[in-house]
Image (cartoon, rainbow over all chains, first blue to last red; front, side, top):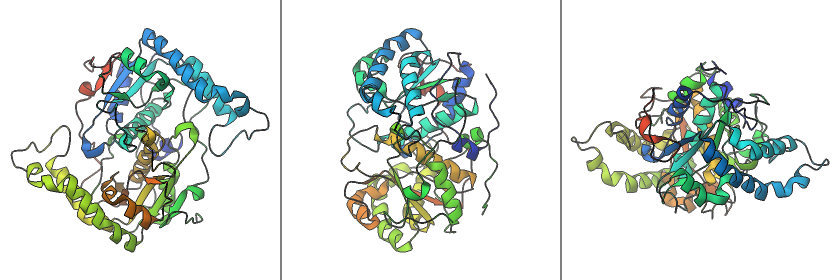
Length: 220
Length: 220
Protein backbone atom coordinates (compact mmCIF):
# COMPACT_ATOMS: atom_id res chain seq x y z
CA UNK A 1 0.00 0.00 0.00
CA UNK A 2 1.84 3.07 -1.18
CA UNK A 3 1.51 6.11 1.05
CA UNK A 4 3.61 8.16 -1.31
CA UNK A 5 2.28 8.74 -4.77
CA UNK A 6 3.36 6.90 -7.87
CA UNK A 7 5.37 9.29 -10.09
CA UNK A 8 3.09 8.54 -13.04
CA UNK A 9 2.92 11.27 -15.66
CA UNK A 10 -0.20 13.30 -16.33
CA UNK A 11 -0.89 11.97 -19.82
CA UNK A 12 -0.05 8.43 -18.80
CA UNK A 13 -2.44 8.73 -15.86
CA UNK A 14 -5.27 9.95 -18.09
CA UNK A 15 -4.76 6.92 -20.31
CA UNK A 16 -4.50 4.32 -17.56
CA UNK A 17 -7.26 4.97 -15.04
CA UNK A 18 -10.04 2.49 -15.75
CA UNK A 19 -12.87 1.87 -13.32
CA UNK A 20 -11.61 -0.48 -10.61
CA UNK A 21 -14.25 -2.70 -9.02
CA UNK A 22 -12.29 -5.41 -7.18
CA UNK A 23 -11.26 -3.59 -4.03
CA UNK A 24 -9.56 -4.89 -0.88
CA UNK A 25 -10.93 -3.96 2.53
CA UNK A 26 -7.53 -2.58 3.55
CA UNK A 27 -8.02 0.85 5.13
CA UNK A 28 -6.86 3.98 3.34
CA UNK A 29 -4.84 6.30 5.61
CA UNK A 30 -6.68 9.48 6.47
CA UNK A 31 -3.83 11.68 5.28
CA UNK A 32 -4.07 10.03 1.87
CA UNK A 33 -7.82 10.74 1.78
CA UNK A 34 -7.15 14.41 2.47
CA UNK A 35 -4.69 14.44 -0.42
CA UNK A 36 -7.23 12.89 -2.77
CA UNK A 37 -9.91 15.39 -1.80
CA UNK A 38 -7.45 18.27 -2.04
CA UNK A 39 -6.89 17.28 -5.66
CA UNK A 40 -10.62 16.77 -6.26
CA UNK A 41 -11.61 20.32 -5.30
CA UNK A 42 -9.13 21.75 -7.82
CA UNK A 43 -11.68 20.69 -10.41
CA UNK A 44 -13.95 23.25 -12.03
CA UNK A 45 -17.40 24.57 -11.10
CA UNK A 46 -19.59 27.18 -12.72
CA UNK A 47 -18.47 30.66 -11.65
CA UNK A 48 -16.04 28.91 -9.25
CA UNK A 49 -18.94 28.61 -6.80
CA UNK A 50 -17.73 25.22 -5.52
CA UNK A 51 -21.31 24.31 -4.66
CA UNK A 52 -20.25 20.95 -3.31
CA UNK A 53 -19.75 18.93 -0.19
CA UNK A 54 -17.69 15.73 -0.11
CA UNK A 55 -19.04 13.16 2.31
CA UNK A 56 -16.55 10.46 3.30
CA UNK A 57 -18.06 7.29 4.76
CA UNK A 58 -15.99 4.57 6.38
CA UNK A 59 -18.42 3.46 9.12
CA UNK A 60 -19.26 -0.23 8.58
CA UNK A 61 -22.77 0.33 9.97
CA UNK A 62 -23.59 3.00 7.41
CA UNK A 63 -22.14 0.94 4.59
CA UNK A 64 -24.04 -2.14 5.74
CA UNK A 65 -27.29 -0.18 5.77
CA UNK A 66 -26.82 1.14 2.25
CA UNK A 67 -25.29 -1.94 0.60
CA UNK A 68 -28.65 -3.77 0.17
CA UNK A 69 -30.04 -0.73 -1.67
CA UNK A 70 -26.98 -0.81 -3.90
CA UNK A 71 -27.45 -4.48 -4.73
CA UNK A 72 -31.09 -3.80 -5.50
CA UNK A 73 -30.15 -1.00 -7.88
CA UNK A 74 -27.67 -3.25 -9.62
CA UNK A 75 -30.26 -6.04 -9.84
CA UNK A 76 -32.81 -3.77 -11.48
CA UNK A 77 -30.36 -2.43 -14.06
CA UNK A 78 -28.09 -5.34 -14.78
CA UNK A 79 -28.93 -8.35 -12.68
CA UNK A 80 -32.14 -8.90 -14.60
CA UNK A 81 -30.09 -9.02 -17.81
CA UNK A 82 -27.49 -11.43 -16.45
CA UNK A 83 -28.12 -14.29 -18.88
CA UNK A 84 -28.25 -12.00 -21.88
CA UNK A 85 -25.12 -10.07 -20.91
CA UNK A 86 -23.08 -13.17 -20.13
CA UNK A 87 -24.34 -15.17 -23.10
CA UNK A 88 -21.47 -17.08 -24.71
CA UNK A 89 -22.37 -15.81 -28.20
CA UNK A 90 -22.00 -12.23 -27.10
CA UNK A 91 -18.99 -10.18 -28.11
CA UNK A 92 -16.73 -10.39 -25.07
CA UNK A 93 -15.27 -6.95 -25.85
CA UNK A 94 -18.03 -4.80 -27.29
CA UNK A 95 -16.93 -1.29 -28.29
CA UNK A 96 -19.64 0.27 -26.15
CA UNK A 97 -21.38 -0.93 -23.06
CA UNK A 98 -20.33 -3.73 -20.79
CA UNK A 99 -18.00 -6.50 -21.81
CA UNK A 100 -18.63 -9.83 -20.13
CA UNK A 101 -15.60 -9.27 -17.89
CA UNK A 102 -16.85 -5.83 -16.94
CA UNK A 103 -20.29 -7.27 -16.26
CA UNK A 104 -18.71 -9.69 -13.81
CA UNK A 105 -16.77 -6.86 -12.20
CA UNK A 106 -19.93 -4.77 -11.79
CA UNK A 107 -21.67 -7.78 -10.30
CA UNK A 108 -18.76 -8.35 -7.92
CA UNK A 109 -18.83 -4.74 -6.76
CA UNK A 110 -22.59 -4.87 -6.26
CA UNK A 111 -22.17 -7.72 -3.81
CA UNK A 112 -18.99 -6.46 -2.13
CA UNK A 113 -19.26 -2.69 -2.10
CA UNK A 114 -19.44 -2.59 1.70
CA UNK A 115 -15.93 -4.05 1.79
CA UNK A 116 -14.46 -1.01 0.06
CA UNK A 117 -12.84 0.88 2.94
CA UNK A 118 -14.01 4.31 1.85
CA UNK A 119 -17.07 5.63 0.08
CA UNK A 120 -17.11 9.20 -1.13
CA UNK A 121 -20.43 10.84 -1.92
CA UNK A 122 -20.10 14.01 -4.00
CA UNK A 123 -23.08 16.09 -2.86
CA UNK A 124 -24.72 19.22 -4.21
CA UNK A 125 -26.79 21.07 -1.60
CA UNK A 126 -29.81 22.77 -3.11
CA UNK A 127 -29.85 20.42 -6.09
CA UNK A 128 -32.52 17.92 -5.04
CA UNK A 129 -35.16 19.49 -7.26
CA UNK A 130 -32.87 20.40 -10.15
CA UNK A 131 -33.81 19.33 -13.65
CA UNK A 132 -30.71 20.90 -15.19
CA UNK A 133 -28.97 18.31 -17.31
CA UNK A 134 -25.79 20.39 -17.19
CA UNK A 135 -25.70 20.63 -13.40
CA UNK A 136 -22.93 18.06 -13.24
CA UNK A 137 -20.57 20.49 -14.97
CA UNK A 138 -20.00 21.83 -11.46
CA UNK A 139 -18.95 18.55 -9.85
CA UNK A 140 -18.08 15.67 -12.18
CA UNK A 141 -14.80 17.25 -13.28
CA UNK A 142 -13.81 17.28 -9.62
CA UNK A 143 -14.94 13.65 -9.26
CA UNK A 144 -12.64 12.78 -12.15
CA UNK A 145 -9.81 14.58 -10.36
CA UNK A 146 -10.58 12.44 -7.30
CA UNK A 147 -10.32 9.21 -9.29
CA UNK A 148 -7.12 10.35 -11.01
CA UNK A 149 -5.51 11.39 -7.73
CA UNK A 150 -6.50 8.04 -6.24
CA UNK A 151 -4.78 6.30 -9.14
CA UNK A 152 -1.58 8.18 -8.28
CA UNK A 153 -1.74 6.55 -4.84
CA UNK A 154 -2.50 3.09 -6.22
CA UNK A 155 -6.12 3.40 -5.14
CA UNK A 156 -8.96 2.43 -7.45
CA UNK A 157 -12.60 3.40 -7.65
CA UNK A 158 -15.52 4.08 -9.91
CA UNK A 159 -18.32 6.63 -10.18
CA UNK A 160 -21.54 4.72 -9.63
CA UNK A 161 -25.15 5.40 -8.72
CA UNK A 162 -26.98 2.17 -7.89
CA UNK A 163 -27.76 3.53 -4.40
CA UNK A 164 -30.33 5.84 -5.98
CA UNK A 165 -33.07 3.23 -6.06
CA UNK A 166 -33.47 4.20 -2.41
CA UNK A 167 -32.37 7.79 -2.60
CA UNK A 168 -34.42 9.13 0.30
CA UNK A 169 -33.34 6.37 2.68
CA UNK A 170 -29.69 6.88 1.74
CA UNK A 171 -29.96 10.64 2.18
CA UNK A 172 -31.47 10.11 5.63
CA UNK A 173 -28.70 7.71 6.64
CA UNK A 174 -26.13 10.29 5.56
CA UNK A 175 -27.91 13.12 7.36
CA UNK A 176 -28.23 15.19 4.20
CA UNK A 177 -30.32 18.37 4.17
CA UNK A 178 -33.72 17.96 2.46
CA UNK A 179 -32.63 19.92 -0.58
CA UNK A 180 -29.31 18.13 -1.16
CA UNK A 181 -28.58 15.44 -3.72
CA UNK A 182 -25.85 12.83 -3.92
CA UNK A 183 -24.44 13.06 -7.42
CA UNK A 184 -22.93 9.60 -7.19
CA UNK A 185 -21.17 7.13 -4.95
CA UNK A 186 -17.45 6.53 -5.37
CA UNK A 187 -16.13 3.44 -3.56
CA UNK A 188 -12.36 3.61 -3.11
CA UNK A 189 -9.87 0.90 -2.21
CA UNK A 190 -6.67 -0.85 -3.15
CA UNK A 191 -7.40 -3.04 -6.19
CA UNK A 192 -7.10 -6.79 -5.88
CA UNK A 193 -7.61 -7.63 -9.56
CA UNK A 194 -6.99 -5.92 -12.88
CA UNK A 195 -4.40 -3.31 -13.69
CA UNK A 196 -3.88 0.31 -14.58
CA UNK A 197 -4.42 -0.24 -18.29
CA UNK A 198 -5.96 1.94 -20.95
CA UNK A 199 -9.76 1.62 -20.92
CA UNK A 200 -11.22 0.35 -24.16
CA UNK A 201 -13.31 2.82 -26.12
CA UNK A 202 -15.04 3.26 -29.46
CA UNK A 203 -12.69 4.24 -32.29
CA UNK A 204 -11.86 7.91 -31.86
CA UNK A 205 -12.55 8.67 -35.52
CA UNK A 206 -16.19 7.66 -35.02
CA UNK A 207 -16.90 10.04 -32.16
CA UNK A 208 -14.94 13.14 -33.21
CA UNK A 209 -16.57 15.46 -35.72
CA UNK A 210 -14.96 18.39 -37.48
CA UNK A 211 -16.65 21.74 -38.08
CA UNK A 212 -20.14 20.22 -38.35
CA UNK A 213 -21.86 17.29 -36.71
CA UNK A 214 -21.31 14.03 -38.57
CA UNK A 215 -18.23 15.17 -40.50
CA UNK A 216 -15.49 12.70 -39.70
CA UNK A 217 -11.81 12.72 -40.62
CA UNK A 218 -9.16 10.08 -40.66
CA UNK A 219 -6.50 10.51 -38.06
CA UNK A 220 -3.30 11.28 -39.92
CA UNK B 1 4.39 25.94 -28.79
CA UNK B 2 5.24 22.48 -27.54
CA UNK B 3 4.22 19.68 -29.84
CA UNK B 4 5.56 17.14 -27.40
CA UNK B 5 3.94 16.96 -24.00
CA UNK B 6 5.31 18.47 -20.84
CA UNK B 7 6.48 15.64 -18.53
CA UNK B 8 4.34 17.00 -15.69
CA UNK B 9 3.28 14.44 -13.12
CA UNK B 10 -0.30 13.33 -12.60
CA UNK B 11 -0.77 14.83 -9.14
CA UNK B 12 1.04 18.01 -10.10
CA UNK B 13 -1.17 18.33 -13.15
CA UNK B 14 -4.34 17.94 -11.09
CA UNK B 15 -3.15 20.75 -8.83
CA UNK B 16 -2.04 23.16 -11.53
CA UNK B 17 -4.74 23.26 -14.20
CA UNK B 18 -6.79 26.40 -13.61
CA UNK B 19 -9.21 27.75 -16.19
CA UNK B 20 -7.22 29.66 -18.81
CA UNK B 21 -9.07 32.49 -20.52
CA UNK B 22 -6.36 34.55 -22.24
CA UNK B 23 -5.70 32.50 -25.34
CA UNK B 24 -3.55 33.26 -28.39
CA UNK B 25 -4.94 32.71 -31.86
CA UNK B 26 -2.00 30.45 -32.73
CA UNK B 27 -3.32 27.27 -34.35
CA UNK B 28 -3.15 23.97 -32.53
CA UNK B 29 -1.71 21.19 -34.70
CA UNK B 30 -4.31 18.62 -35.67
CA UNK B 31 -2.20 15.73 -34.38
CA UNK B 32 -2.18 17.40 -30.96
CA UNK B 33 -5.97 17.75 -31.07
CA UNK B 34 -6.29 14.03 -31.76
CA UNK B 35 -4.09 13.34 -28.74
CA UNK B 36 -6.23 15.55 -26.51
CA UNK B 37 -9.44 13.85 -27.64
CA UNK B 38 -7.87 10.41 -27.29
CA UNK B 39 -7.25 11.24 -23.63
CA UNK B 40 -10.73 12.73 -23.23
CA UNK B 41 -12.59 9.60 -24.27
CA UNK B 42 -10.73 7.55 -21.63
CA UNK B 43 -13.02 9.29 -19.16
CA UNK B 44 -15.99 7.44 -17.68
CA UNK B 45 -19.59 7.11 -18.82
CA UNK B 46 -22.51 5.20 -17.33
CA UNK B 47 -22.32 1.55 -18.37
CA UNK B 48 -19.38 2.55 -20.62
CA UNK B 49 -21.96 3.61 -23.21
CA UNK B 50 -19.82 6.53 -24.40
CA UNK B 51 -22.98 8.37 -25.44
CA UNK B 52 -20.99 11.31 -26.72
CA UNK B 53 -19.78 13.10 -29.79
CA UNK B 54 -16.93 15.62 -29.74
CA UNK B 55 -17.40 18.43 -32.21
CA UNK B 56 -14.23 20.36 -33.04
CA UNK B 57 -14.73 23.80 -34.55
CA UNK B 58 -11.92 25.86 -36.04
CA UNK B 59 -13.81 27.57 -38.89
CA UNK B 60 -13.66 31.36 -38.36
CA UNK B 61 -17.10 31.76 -39.95
CA UNK B 62 -18.75 29.42 -37.44
CA UNK B 63 -16.94 31.03 -34.54
CA UNK B 64 -17.87 34.50 -35.76
CA UNK B 65 -21.53 33.50 -35.99
CA UNK B 66 -21.61 32.12 -32.45
CA UNK B 67 -19.40 34.70 -30.72
CA UNK B 68 -22.14 37.37 -30.43
CA UNK B 69 -24.40 34.84 -28.70
CA UNK B 70 -21.57 34.10 -26.30
CA UNK B 71 -21.05 37.77 -25.47
CA UNK B 72 -24.77 38.11 -24.91
CA UNK B 73 -24.77 35.17 -22.49
CA UNK B 74 -21.86 36.68 -20.62
CA UNK B 75 -23.58 40.07 -20.52
CA UNK B 76 -26.75 38.59 -19.03
CA UNK B 77 -24.89 36.67 -16.33
CA UNK B 78 -21.95 38.86 -15.49
CA UNK B 79 -21.83 41.98 -17.62
CA UNK B 80 -24.85 43.40 -15.86
CA UNK B 81 -23.00 43.00 -12.54
CA UNK B 82 -19.78 44.58 -13.76
CA UNK B 83 -19.71 47.54 -11.37
CA UNK B 84 -20.64 45.39 -8.40
CA UNK B 85 -18.11 42.66 -9.19
CA UNK B 86 -15.26 45.08 -9.86
CA UNK B 87 -16.09 47.37 -6.94
CA UNK B 88 -12.88 48.42 -5.17
CA UNK B 89 -14.27 47.48 -1.76
CA UNK B 90 -14.84 43.94 -2.87
CA UNK B 91 -12.57 41.15 -1.69
CA UNK B 92 -10.17 40.70 -4.61
CA UNK B 93 -9.74 37.01 -3.76
CA UNK B 94 -13.06 35.70 -2.48
CA UNK B 95 -13.01 32.02 -1.45
CA UNK B 96 -15.95 31.26 -3.74
CA UNK B 97 -17.14 32.86 -6.90
CA UNK B 98 -15.23 35.22 -9.10
CA UNK B 99 -12.29 37.28 -7.93
CA UNK B 100 -11.89 40.64 -9.64
CA UNK B 101 -9.02 39.26 -11.71
CA UNK B 102 -11.12 36.26 -12.74
CA UNK B 103 -13.99 38.59 -13.59
CA UNK B 104 -11.69 40.48 -15.94
CA UNK B 105 -10.52 37.20 -17.46
CA UNK B 106 -14.10 36.04 -18.04
CA UNK B 107 -14.87 39.40 -19.61
CA UNK B 108 -11.80 39.14 -21.83
CA UNK B 109 -12.79 35.68 -23.00
CA UNK B 110 -16.35 36.82 -23.69
CA UNK B 111 -15.04 39.43 -26.11
CA UNK B 112 -12.25 37.34 -27.63
CA UNK B 113 -13.53 33.77 -27.69
CA UNK B 114 -13.54 33.71 -31.50
CA UNK B 115 -9.74 34.15 -31.40
CA UNK B 116 -9.27 30.84 -29.59
CA UNK B 117 -8.08 28.58 -32.41
CA UNK B 118 -10.18 25.59 -31.41
CA UNK B 119 -13.57 25.18 -29.82
CA UNK B 120 -14.65 21.75 -28.63
CA UNK B 121 -18.33 21.07 -28.03
CA UNK B 122 -18.99 17.94 -25.95
CA UNK B 123 -22.34 16.75 -27.27
CA UNK B 124 -24.85 14.20 -26.03
CA UNK B 125 -27.20 12.96 -28.76
CA UNK B 126 -30.63 12.15 -27.42
CA UNK B 127 -30.19 14.44 -24.43
CA UNK B 128 -32.03 17.55 -25.61
CA UNK B 129 -35.10 16.78 -23.52
CA UNK B 130 -33.30 15.30 -20.53
CA UNK B 131 -34.10 16.64 -17.08
CA UNK B 132 -31.63 14.29 -15.39
CA UNK B 133 -29.35 16.33 -13.16
CA UNK B 134 -26.86 13.45 -13.12
CA UNK B 135 -26.65 13.17 -16.92
CA UNK B 136 -23.28 14.89 -16.91
CA UNK B 137 -21.74 11.93 -15.08
CA UNK B 138 -21.38 10.46 -18.55
CA UNK B 139 -19.40 13.31 -20.08
CA UNK B 140 -17.90 15.87 -17.69
CA UNK B 141 -15.24 13.47 -16.44
CA UNK B 142 -14.10 13.13 -20.04
CA UNK B 143 -14.19 16.93 -20.44
CA UNK B 144 -11.89 17.17 -17.42
CA UNK B 145 -9.57 14.65 -19.07
CA UNK B 146 -9.57 16.90 -22.15
CA UNK B 147 -8.54 19.95 -20.13
CA UNK B 148 -5.87 18.01 -18.25
CA UNK B 149 -4.43 16.54 -21.45
CA UNK B 150 -4.39 20.02 -22.97
CA UNK B 151 -2.42 21.27 -19.97
CA UNK B 152 0.18 18.58 -20.67
CA UNK B 153 0.65 20.16 -24.12
CA UNK B 154 0.78 23.70 -22.74
CA UNK B 155 -2.73 24.39 -24.01
CA UNK B 156 -5.30 26.11 -21.85
CA UNK B 157 -9.07 26.16 -21.85
CA UNK B 158 -12.19 26.32 -19.75
CA UNK B 159 -15.58 24.63 -19.64
CA UNK B 160 -18.12 27.34 -20.33
CA UNK B 161 -21.73 27.66 -21.44
CA UNK B 162 -22.58 31.26 -22.34
CA UNK B 163 -23.51 30.14 -25.87
CA UNK B 164 -26.69 28.60 -24.44
CA UNK B 165 -28.62 31.86 -24.49
CA UNK B 166 -29.07 31.01 -28.17
CA UNK B 167 -29.01 27.26 -27.95
CA UNK B 168 -31.18 26.52 -30.96
CA UNK B 169 -29.27 28.86 -33.26
CA UNK B 170 -25.96 27.38 -32.14
CA UNK B 171 -27.22 23.83 -32.62
CA UNK B 172 -28.34 24.72 -36.14
CA UNK B 173 -24.97 26.28 -36.99
CA UNK B 174 -23.27 23.11 -35.78
CA UNK B 175 -25.65 20.85 -37.69
CA UNK B 176 -26.69 18.96 -34.57
CA UNK B 177 -29.56 16.48 -34.69
CA UNK B 178 -32.80 17.79 -33.16
CA UNK B 179 -32.44 15.63 -30.07
CA UNK B 180 -28.81 16.47 -29.30
CA UNK B 181 -27.51 18.89 -26.69
CA UNK B 182 -24.19 20.65 -26.33
CA UNK B 183 -23.07 20.07 -22.76
CA UNK B 184 -20.67 22.99 -22.89
CA UNK B 185 -18.19 24.88 -25.01
CA UNK B 186 -14.47 24.45 -24.40
CA UNK B 187 -12.27 27.05 -26.12
CA UNK B 188 -8.68 25.86 -26.37
CA UNK B 189 -5.50 27.78 -27.11
CA UNK B 190 -1.99 28.60 -25.99
CA UNK B 191 -2.25 30.93 -22.99
CA UNK B 192 -0.93 34.47 -23.26
CA UNK B 193 -1.37 35.46 -19.61
CA UNK B 194 -1.40 33.67 -16.27
CA UNK B 195 0.32 30.43 -15.36
CA UNK B 196 -0.20 26.81 -14.45
CA UNK B 197 -0.77 27.53 -10.78
CA UNK B 198 -3.00 25.86 -8.20
CA UNK B 199 -6.54 27.20 -8.44
CA UNK B 200 -7.78 28.86 -5.26
CA UNK B 201 -10.56 27.05 -3.45
CA UNK B 202 -12.51 27.12 -0.21
CA UNK B 203 -10.67 25.56 2.74
CA UNK B 204 -10.85 21.80 2.33
CA UNK B 205 -11.90 21.28 5.95
CA UNK B 206 -15.10 23.23 5.26
CA UNK B 207 -16.28 21.11 2.35
CA UNK B 208 -15.29 17.61 3.48
CA UNK B 209 -17.61 15.83 5.88
CA UNK B 210 -16.96 12.59 7.71
CA UNK B 211 -19.50 9.83 8.20
CA UNK B 212 -22.47 12.23 8.30
CA UNK B 213 -23.27 15.52 6.59
CA UNK B 214 -21.93 18.51 8.48
CA UNK B 215 -19.38 16.61 10.57
CA UNK B 216 -16.04 18.24 9.93
CA UNK B 217 -12.56 17.23 11.03
CA UNK B 218 -9.29 19.04 11.24
CA UNK B 219 -6.71 17.89 8.78
CA UNK B 220 -3.94 16.32 10.79
